[in-house]
Image 1 (spheres, rainbow, N blue to C red):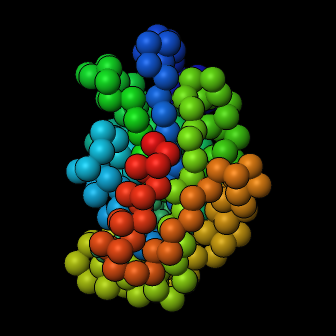
Image 2: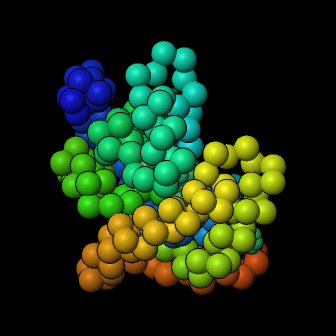
Length: 216
Ligand code: UP5
Ligand code: MG
């Protein structure tokens, strides 16, 4: 399935493009509503990074006319479950190739909301091993209560099918059971930069800047 989804052309294009400029990746993780998207937008304004939100890419694919995965993605998102990695990684990879093909200097990526579980991590390693350098994980640490409150508030106008209490409880469980262990794995290798994400947007961003100025 993976080969079919990625397409041979896309695979060899990424190989060629990454020979010229290997993509540098920061994974951005944290609970639902921790502020990943908000902070990534601010990073993009100040630094030469391209923001790829796995969730946004999945929502776009869900809404794409003729997508064979629309219904599946819809069900997974409402249930707060993690979509099979073949789908997510093909979307991420396609976006990376498109970005770098248009402009070869754009080889710095923030990958937001991925990898969320072991299946995601293994899929990434299988497909991207040697083709991209993961510098570190930017981890927005925030209590479940704050995360839920932010998403419920956003849910008043976001139109997101998962910004309701029932889906949020499932999203939090998935985050605790599946994503935290991935963060812990990276932590063991000294590859996590943790930020207290419960503060104001600007306070959080000040810490983000300090990390990027030092390391990126
Ligand atoms: N806000 C942000 N920062 C604030 C601050 N410091 N103080 C006060 N308010 C703050 O922010 C959320 C809300 O809080 C906004 O209203 C914002 O203004 C406010 P946002 O920046 O959007 O937070 P973010 O962490 O991006 O929250 P999001 O809801 O996007 O996180 P999720 O991880 O839950 O959602 P995502 O879109 O990544 O994934 C959705 C679903 O897609 C998953 O549940 C899963 O089903 C599926 N998915 C996969 O299957 N695989 C993937 O790889 C990715 C997603
Ligand atoms: Mg987001």
